[in-house]
Image (tube, rainbow, N blue to C red; front, side):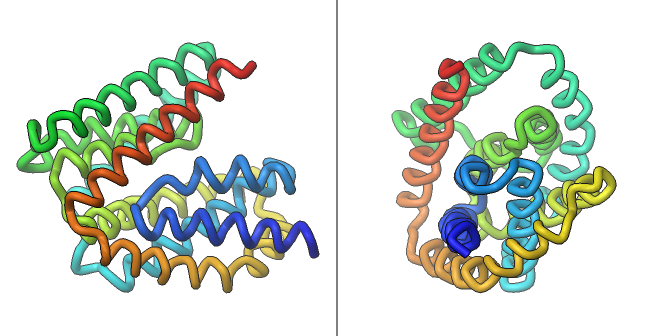
Length: 242
């Protein structure tokens, strides 16, 4: 029961973050869940929660989804996954995570220092960001940063940002869960921890939505880049702690 409470608390926190900002829960959920559960249980539980968040947000706010953007991002993600798997096997983790952290930190620092300098007016480069989301997802389960950078450059409103990313994460997470099923990792233990956490996940979705609606565009951009800088810091710690 103590483990179930810990899992529910972690998924509640991760869900609030995901529902408020559209991404970022993976760096909270899986590492903290892995302290209480085997990784082969923690990862599928987190993905089931991700599917729940994305499904409810899509149902709630489907009108706010940039469908074309989400479609291009999803399709190009699947193209990037094989390269991510190759990188995972061949490129030293220290180098890959350090470079990624520097790229993310540089972009967010520049965006905060020179807000509004660059803007993408259309979806012509969506494939590029979706592809790199697939690469990072295949290598490290970290699709979010390229998607967040793309949404930032498109100047989406907080509501559009949140909804469109869930339009992306819903099919991507379903595909991921299918992979766990094929690998035999969708087990009764996964279902048990997910169902015990579902009430908290549901509350977290609506709490995150309320937070999102209270943020104006300027606040959202500040929190978005602060979150990306936090991700960059975590990546650097992960890269050099070994």
